Amino acid sequence: MAYYCLHELHWTPSTFLRLPRAERAFVAAAASIRAKEEAKRRKEAERKSKHR
Image (cartoon, rainbow, N blue to C red):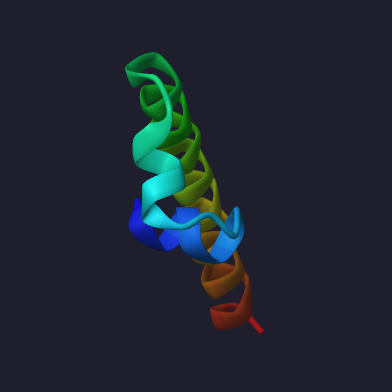
């Protein structure tokens, strides 16, 4: 979570912690979805590169 906020959103930890609880939960869910999609794309790319 901290990595996503710092590197992707350019937020300091205090910026994230000042958000209301529901907004922090939303950011965490969005980061989780993005991480899963990136893992899926990485896995697909690895699968394609092995078949060459």
